[in-house]
Length: 106
Image (cartoon, rainbow, N blue to C red; front, side, top):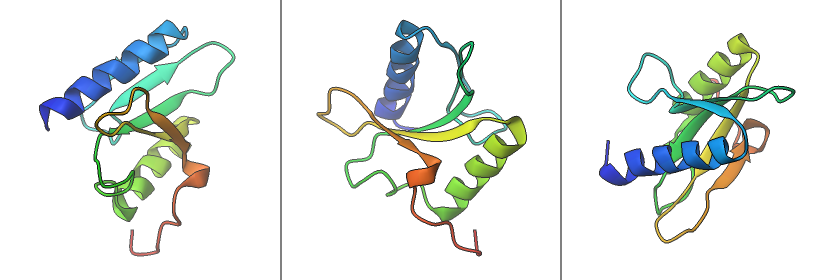
């Protein structure tokens, strides 16, 4: 993982904690999410953080999207992409309902 990627994951956690969420950094663990975010009266979120300049899906392909969506479904959580490219001050939050269609090959 790039240093920028890890920094962005920590920054996403900071933003969410400032909004009252309890967060866990899960990157490098056995699941698909980089961050798990929980808050009373809110749907839990499994979050993939991407900091690529080439677009939100440049390194978040169909198979990765499908895997995160499956884990989120199993957990009763929302699958969310936090895309935070270089020079942006805040991430763009993209819910899985707005992701490109996942093909059957995924």
